[in-house]
Image 1 (cartoon, one colour):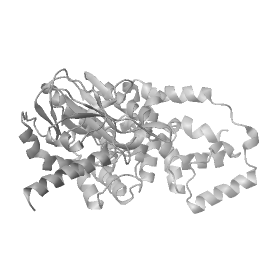
Image 2: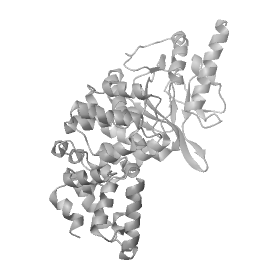
Image 3: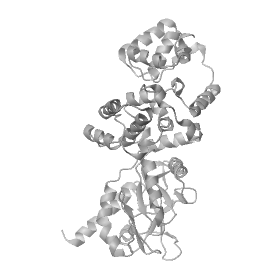
Length: 433
């Protein structure tokens, strides 16, 4: 293959990846061309994308597009404008998004005085993307813009050449130090490596970003984070309702990719003082029984290898927070009121929600013979009962058994262990009805 053909293949590949990752489905976005003074991007009627990659011209692309009458995007950007010395903070943002939100984000040098953090996604409503970007900025504050946002929808995407600063803008690999490249030839030289990085990017699941956004809108996210840290050592090794469901379901899509679920489990085990042998057993169960909807390409061996790699991860040494699993509550359907180590923030939330609920309609209670038949079926079939309210059961003992089912129990032994783990006031909650 001649060098000319090779260069052409790289440019074609980059055009393909921009279309796959960032642009509206099956069309090119509107764009502005960068002037060499004033960092201005006046709108252009048409453009040649290859010029963007060879440095002849540089374009900023409009991220929003319309799909079925709804404003959508495939890319969210944190435009961090704090100088070249802010790279450690940028890496901190990348670690937070990965370890705490289960998101894959990518770092690019802007070519001037800052960095961009890219959050690629399946097509998603702009408001969901913006809520997640806002949360990241609250967690690791920085000076700069969130894109897309009201009045800020256009962004220059790497690799390209900053026409005013006269420097290459490019994607950085993990832990790569910053290199200043002041010539278009240097841009040309790194294009094959930039294409390889882009080919390895997989958009984040829209469902995961939506779940995060829903959580950030809720009262849970407004609670003081220090009031969401439970004293897990009081459980003596027993799993609380949320982790029982986490184990049963093989993790949660709302937590993110498999690595994020693995890290959540490691953080829990560390905070709860779970012995290594028991923690490894839980990790083995997660590896063998992973929720099939969780995004991963790892086989069981690779999953366990990743588990070992989390042992000394700094993020796993932080206290376990209920917030890690609250964003998956709709998916896992656990009951925080049944947790005997629920922290202050959770108790306040549960109390607040309880007073706002309408009282259960007694007419909806099942006749005793019907409830017994339903209970027998549940016990024999092992069916998922997460959609059944324990309030429909008239007999307090039946109600207690279903309540245990709702908190992850699947057989009689599990039920006894569950109720033995509860404080006396909670054990009597149902049996004294």
